[in-house]
Length: 82
Image 1 (cartoon, rainbow, N blue to C red):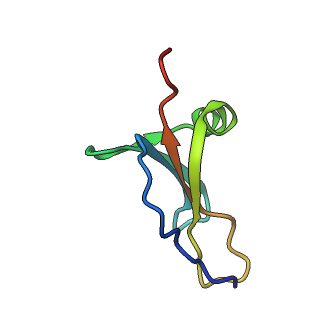
Image 2: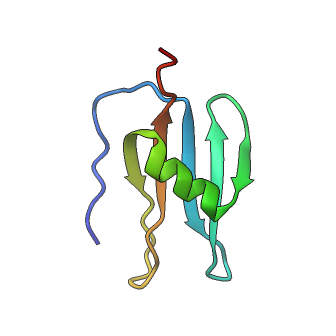
C-alpha cells in the first residue's frame, strides 16, 4: 500500500465527488457541496463530472484489503462563467 501524503497547499473547491464501495462490494457515488450534506448520484453523473469538470485534486481512499477497488474523493471548482 502506498502512503498518502496530503498536499500542504490549501485550495478552493466548490464540490467533492466521492466514489466508495459499500459493504456488499458495490460502488456508490456521492456529490458533497461545500457547506451542505452529501447527495447520492448515479454512475453516469459521476462519469460525466469526471470527464467534463475542472478537477483540482484527487484524494485516494485507501482500504486495508489488498483487493479493494479504487476509492476516491475528487475536488472540483466550478467553471468560470465568463
